[in-house]
Image (tube, rainbow, N blue to C red; front, side):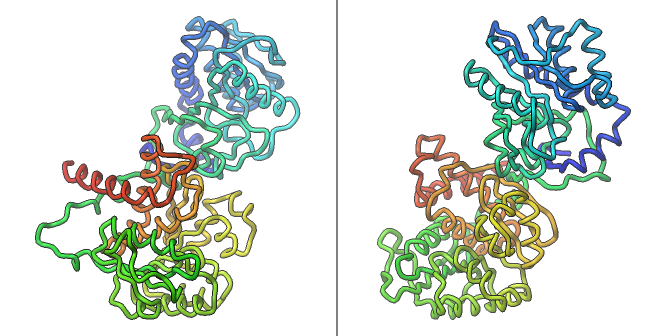
Length: 498
C-alpha cells in the first residue's frame, strides 16, 4: 500500500476485519496523540476531546489517555452510555478510566483551549449529525476560531462523507486531519479539502495484501513518469505531431487561442486553429506560430490529435463539425460546447461509443449532469461514481473537473488529482487544459497518460503561481500557459536524473 492509495469505507472495513487481532485502536490513538502533542505543546490551556458513541470515540479515548500520560490537561466530553460502545471502543474507554481519566457530558463554555480534537464519528457517519452532537460540532468550530487553536479530526472530520467528500451539515472545520490505515477519497474531493486542513495518513503498521488492492489512487507524478523523457537531438517539428483546435465561434475566439497557445507551449510540433467565426483574426498576434484555418479546412488537415469544443458554440454548424470530428481517425478531446452538443443529440453518443480508440471528455459538473441526464447535485454528491458512469456510458476517459478533479478510465480505474486551488475557478481554464491534453496526444502519449499528466500539471501550475504571489484571486487562464511549460520541463529533467 502506497501513500497515494485511496480506500472506500467498505474496503477499509474488510481490512479492519482481516487485522482484527492487532491493536489497531491503540495504534491509532498513539499516532493521534503524537501529532496532538506537537499541536498543543506551546500552549498552557487544556485540550478538549470530543468522543463519539462508536469506534472513533475509542480512538479519542486512547489518544486522551496517552496525552494525560504526557501530563497534558485533557477534558473529554462524552455522552453515550459506556455499555453501548462497540467492543474495542469500550475497552479503550475502560483503559482511559482505569488510568484516572474522567468525562463530562457538556463542553465547558468558558474554558480556553490549546487544541480541540474531533473524535465523534470519523468515517462511520451516513447522515447529518443531530441533537447534542450537532451542537458540539458547531461549538467546536466556534471555539477553535475564538481561541485561535488547531482543530484536529480523527480519521475524517465529523459530518464529512469519507467516500464522496459530501458535507453533511453541521460539519467540523478541521485544521488538521489524521486518517488511519489509508487515505479516503472524500478527504480530497468535493467539500473534503475545505474541512480537512492538513492531512496525514497513519498506516498503523499495516500493509494489506494484494487481495485487498486500493479502490483508487491519489494522482502523482509516478502515474505518468515513464513518459517524461528528454527529447532526442535528431528531431524536427514533425517528430512532435500536429494538434488541432476546433472552436472559436463568434465572440468566443479567445477560447481557441488559449487552447492553441497551451498546446504549442507544451510541445506540439504544429498547432492549427480551426475557427468557426468567419471574422476571426487570421493571425494570433501574441502567438504568431499558431496556424489559422477555417473549421472545415482544419478537419482536412493531417492531425495526430484534435481538441473540439473551446469556443465551439451550439449552432447547427458546430453540430455538423462535431459529428465529422467524431468520425476522424485522430485522438480527440471533447470539452465545453462539444459536451453540451453531445448531451443534446443522441446520434453523437453512438458515434463516440463506436470510435476505434477512446476519446477524452473533460466536463465540469454541469456538463456532466447534462451528459448523464441528472442534476448537478447528483454529480457532486458522488463525483467518483459520476466519473465512472461517464467513462462506461461514453467509452471514454473522463476528467470530472472541480475541487479534486476525478479521472476515470474506460477500464474502471480512477484517480483524484490533489493539485490545484480556487484561483482556477475562472474563465478559460478548461480551454487551457484541453490544449495541454491535445499537445501530449499529438506527441504520441497514450490517452490515459496524457489525461493524467495534463490534469496534474494544470493544477500544479496554478499552485506554483499562487505560491509565488500570483492569485488565487485574479489568477487568469493565460497565466497558466508559460509556467506549465516551465514545470513540465522540470519534470522531464528531474526524471531523467533518476
